Amino acid sequence: TGIILVFWLVGMGGASHVFGTPLIRVSRDESRILVTERWPTRRVTHVVALASLSPPDLHVGKDDDGDPYFRIVLVLPGRDIVLHEGHDHETAELRLRDIRAALA
Image 1: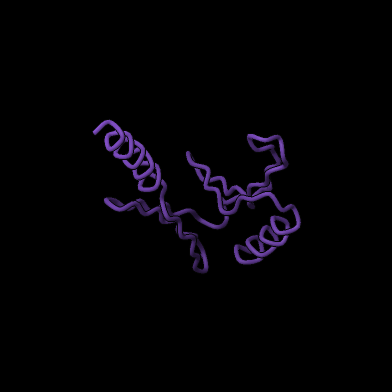
Image 2 (image 1 turned 90 degrees about the vertical axis):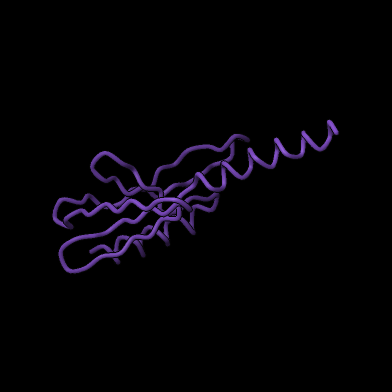
């Protein structure tokens, strides 16, 4: 019985992490971008004028093992949105170029 309780606790912890992470969609029209964050139970949409938006930046850091880790971050008023993250610098640079071109 104790082992089943352990499986339930680990499963509930994993599920809360998965369901606590939003699905993010960024779209744009001629004058603004819409950033929609979606969870299983709610949805939040941020609307930002393109003229007031700063271009996304590439943040360089390290992961838990000390390896280089790259994040592309879009800064919104009151909220930072991570658009891409990973260990490969070349891929991050290509994605950053594509994202900046799409927002231009």
